[in-house]
Image (cartoon, rainbow over all chains, first blue to last red; front, side, top):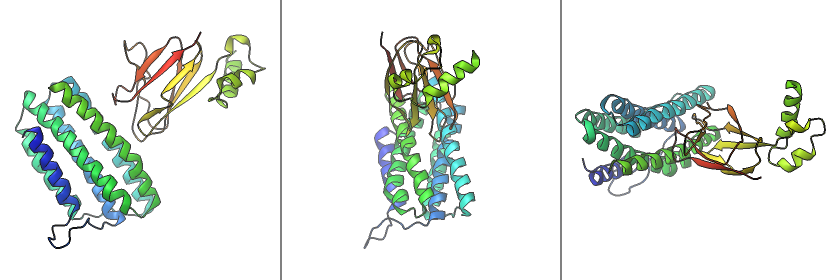
Length: 178
Length: 117
């Protein structure tokens, strides 16, 4: 999938995730704190999954280093989220958004597994750029504004610059592959 | 000697953003331990502050206040590195020359130390 198509696909994904398809009144979904926690965990798990495939399919040092960082950082975020919901006595709740994210990630995983060499590296890093853009958009536009619990909101606000740094790093790797 | 060094460090740490003041407040420390201590917080995926002017022998303590591990590595020749600094932990660098540094884990995070004579 070309970079433009991949970017378009994730813009469409972001739109489909966070806008209802009701033609008469498009609006962002209303998520409870348990649902926001679920979306946050799934978003991080997805990127750990992409990183795991990269670590098996790539031989490029920049890709491998980036993937290692993604696996480490997103696990750290999940650990913090899990610790928080335990402390708050909240159970993350599956919802339409988290289910859609999981289903889309499975398709991406299947596509990445068919590739190797430079084609894989390009597909992986293009996906990372597009995925982080989509998740940043969701965190800033939906999850942070809708979070009711102050600690959950604070955690999301702390995660946002991590995602932005990942995006900048991914774009740097993407440029180096050209 | 170790106790004196520790005492000097404690006194100066409390004034970490004001090295000149720290030097004035250090009557108990012998001259050879008269160094300033700077604190650089790693937070919001940035080095804060990202630029320091120090003297040879001064200490810079990097404190990781982020959720994720970081490191501090000299940029141009990898002359020195902290290795991994887990969240909540810190690393002390003794200044011996001007350095540009970065986080080798998150390569877009950068800072610098300038040595004044």
